Length: 105
Image 1: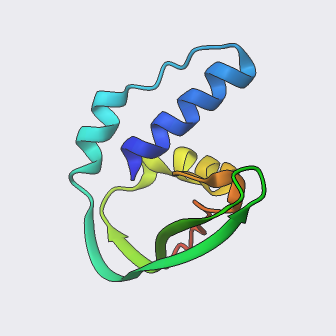
Image 2: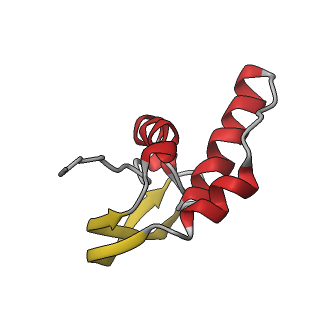
Image 3: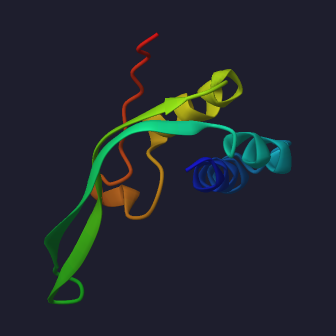
């Protein structure tokens, strides 16, 4: 998730702010491997939309549900929060990639 989120944030900053980023991608991605999933209640959900431009139905899908992580998440909060605002992943223009951060501790 962190790898895709960093890519999305980097692309948005580059294309919409005409600026580069100085994220330490390698360090953040390596650190993300230390985070553990303690509860995974996610599932795949398929849905369709109609494309007037292509005059056809489009199959879309994504993960829904709840997932709980454990570990030193502090360094990830700024990126996770930004991702919760801009959405992350594919087809964000169709409302996909939305997530909410809930701090349970």
